[in-house]
Length: 284
Image (cartoon, rainbow, N blue to C red; front, side):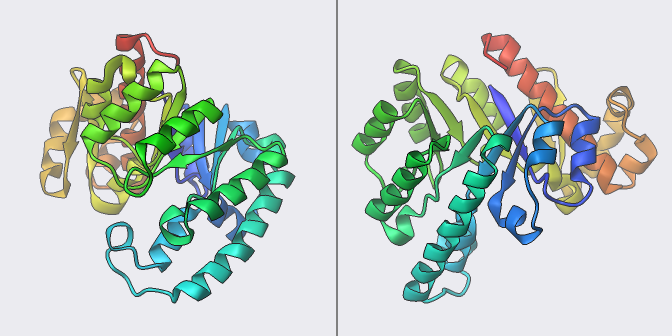
């Protein structure tokens, strides 16, 4: 099991990721396009690069109550027109940069444009020989459709909204057929532990940045992940030795220096990842 750490597009984050030895990153086309950046430098610095389609942007614009907190909606007809132009730019970028990423997610806008249109876009990506992952959404697609994806693709992603029980069921089905599964935005550490040999091939997460944003601390302690929220930050004093051991400037860390907090969270997530792979003898 491997973690693709997201957020590398942000200024200064590549240096921190490299400093602690991160091997795999996920980057979003939204930011690559915004900053007019290619992926060549990322591929030089990391073992695997996962290109995300940026679908979440459209869920936000659509005012999806679950994904975006019920923000003001963009008229659906306007949104669909925007998606058409966006996909063209995304496809052109994928073709141009295909030497510099290992996997790319389809534009999985099932709740907005429907299954047929998503399939058409995926087919177009397939026809260009891109390493595209179909993305299953349990909230709007059937279990039968998931089985179809597993038959047609070796590597399938799971996104959207789902319960822990759904994840367990979907993972057990995939592992029976020896498919690889990627879970988007998923770092439920205890659930990963519970999945054991049915664990996904990979997950991605931006939670390593939650320390600098919201004061959250992640600590790998005695084979479990301890999570301290902003009101519990004083408990960091109990982990000063651990912070020194991983090369964190303890004084800055205790004072909420965002680089040191991010670094500490990263290292502890990587240690938990390594622990799960050792325990269940998984491919790293």
